[in-house]
Amino acid sequence: MKQAEFKIISPEEIHDNVFKLIDKDWMLITSGTFDKYNSMTASWGGMGILWKKPVAFIFIRPTRFTYEFAENNQRMSLCFFPDKYRDILNLCGTKSGRQIDKMNIEGLTPLITGEGTTFYEEARMAVFVKKLYSQFIDKNLVLDPAIHKLYNNDYHKMYICEIEKVMIKK
Image 1 (spheres, rainbow, N blue to C red):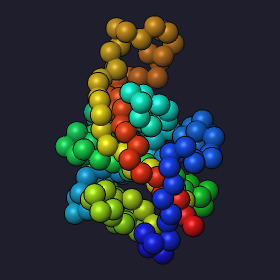
Image 2: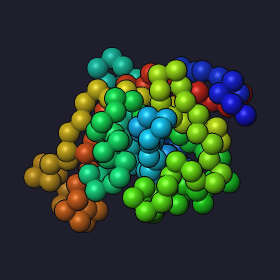
Image 3: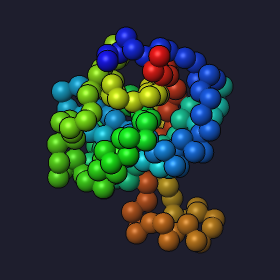
């Protein structure tokens, strides 16, 4: 399978329940160039409309290896996979790119868009985004004290990204 086996749809044509898609199915965030990139599994984020644009918002801790790629590149992919890839997603969420070479994970075949964004042949849907805004979560502005228990003084950076393209398997 190659990029030709995907078809482009508009963000409005995404029929998945976004809450399930991100929280239960998880997404693989990939940033970098085709020659040097990293991926991480995430279950925090969302999609919606902001500034009259379709957007995705994602969160990456600065301690994650993917963080430096997200900081140094304008575009990223958010890939969603069939259930049979759960073990790979678990691996990408528990092992750092500093520990393993995520560019060569068995069972994942990287592809590249014309814009230079890496995504995976095995994905059932790939959402391609361009950064519009980023900011660290300010612990002093968190209103619910229970939320602090989710952090070990390692607060995420939020990225609000324009959804430029969505591709799904034909």
